[in-house]
Every structure is written in structure tokens, then in C-alpha cells.
Image (cartoon, rainbow, N blue to C red):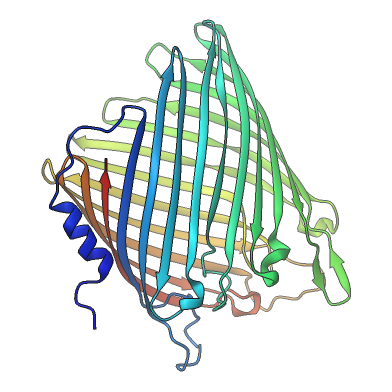
Length: 395
């Protein structure tokens, strides 16, 4: 039995050597190492055979570099990060992760500004909806461009486009390979207090690259979604701020209109800071979301969360969170569900972050998840809990 795993030993050695001045004001290299334990890694349902291994430990090593470079009034930011994750028992899941992003915040004159950028991410797909022991990497690519015109000191109009593409390594999951294009146009009113209120219209086009097969029928999953939402950032006081992006959305499928849905869609976030060292964030949402399952591919999610952060001292911070989310799955043609096609997940987490020196950070986090699911659509009930340790050093 390893009392002090290799990554933790390395973290301890790094923590003993406090970093000094930045290597560069533009490029900031960093490394992280960590260990985690999960007592139900594959999120196996409660009624799974006892012979299947549930728990596992994972080691993680990350190396990366952050970029921040002002060029006149323009600003370039980005990050390049690679990781190596290995598991003690499920060695076939070992993988190399990648995370790259770049953003150009552009400005022309005194009235035009926006952002152009993109990102690439490759990670292990979560096991919540697909409990395979085979490795299944998810690759996400994103490109975006947007711009706005400050036509008046208090008014700004803007437009933008974003494309996301998701690809899955495992053949059984390839039916979730998809591309989503989002275009939008909006107008905002900026008050002298710093608050903002506006209206945004969006059009989303989703294309699934591999049709889902139900018996002898191939199901076209492509859809369009139109939204009209209020876009609010209300700075009520230094203590309380409210962000709201919510309104009406309608999703239509190219075939089988019984899957279409519409109604309230959006998210509200309340930030409250009653003390300088104590912060709370509350979220509530009702959103359409993708489901990484081989039975269904989208749902309507309703949920709420509460997080808190407490600066115990200049070097120690405690944090905690609660979350509850209910997913209601689309009804598939030719498939009959026995009962309510939904599941509910409850999550809690608590952690401590310790910063012994300016460029060294140590953290430990514990979590507990519980889901009440619907086995007929592949989202059975499960329980999971675990703990993780991470050490990060910036140079």
C-alpha cells in the first residue's frame, strides 16, 4: 500500500521551494500534480453485480502555460495545457488530456469592440450516463467571433457566431457526435451605475453526424432552436449582484414533431457578499441539454445550486457547494417508457485551499453524489463519493 503516492511526494517537494518573481509578464508556466479516490468511478447503478470493481484511485500530472498580452488597446489571452491521468485498477482508461484556448479582445476606435477565438479540449467522458469500462475520450472544438457597436454612451448593439463540435472516441458513443452552430443579435442599455439590461435573440442549429438507429429505423436527430431572452446584469449594491439570461425558447426537430418542446429557458445567478471574507453564489436554471447516452440524446434540465467561499486567513480558504438537478428526457418515437422518463441528481462538495507561498497552492476536496434514475433509459440510480488532492506551482 502506498502511503504517499509519487505525485503527492512531488507536490511536497515543490511546496518546499517557494517561487520568486515571474519568469515573464506575458507567459506564465505552471504545473499541477494530484491524486483522487472515487468509490464508484464508473457510476454503476446500485443493483450492479458485486463482482464489478467500483472504486479506483487516479494520479494526475498537468503542465501548461497561460498567456496574457496587451497590445495597445487590444488584448490576447490564452492557455495551453496537457495532462496525464492514470488509474490504479482501470488501467485501460489511462489517457493524455489536452486543453488549448486563444482569445483576441479587439477594439477599433471608441465605438467598436468584440472577441475572436477558439478552443480545443480532449478529456475522458464522464461516466454518469454511459458506464463502460472502455476508454471514451470526448473532443470538443469551438470557434467564435462577435462584435458590438456603442452607438450611444448608454446603448450597445452586438452580434456573434459560435460553432461547437463534439466527437467521441468509442464507437458505441459515436451516435452523439454532433455540431452546434449558434448565431445571435442583441441590444443592451448600460446605466450610469454599471448595471446592464438588454434583449438577445438566438438561433441554434444542431446536427448529429451519425443517425440513431431504433430497430430498422434510422432516427434523424437534427434540430433548430430559437430563443428570445432578457440579458440582465444588475449591480444592486457592492454586496449583491444579479445576472439573468432567461426567456422563451423553442426547439424543433427535423422529423417526429412529438419530440418538439418549448417554454421558459435560461439561468439566473445571484452573488451575495455579506462580509469581505464571505461569499455566496446561488444559481437556478431551466435549460435544454445534451445527454451522453446510447438511448436518449437530449433533456430539459431544471436545477438549483448554492456555493460558498470563506477566506479563513490570507493563506487559507474554505469552500462548499450544494446542487440539485432534475432531467426530463425527450420521448423517443417507437419507444415506450414505463413511468416518468426523468432522473434527479443531488451533489455536495466541501474543500480547503492553502496557499503557503504566492505561487504555490494546495487543495483538498471531498464530494458526494446521489442520483435517482430511470433504468429503462440507461440512467439508473447510483451513489458515489470521493476525495481529491491537488498541488499547483506557477513559475
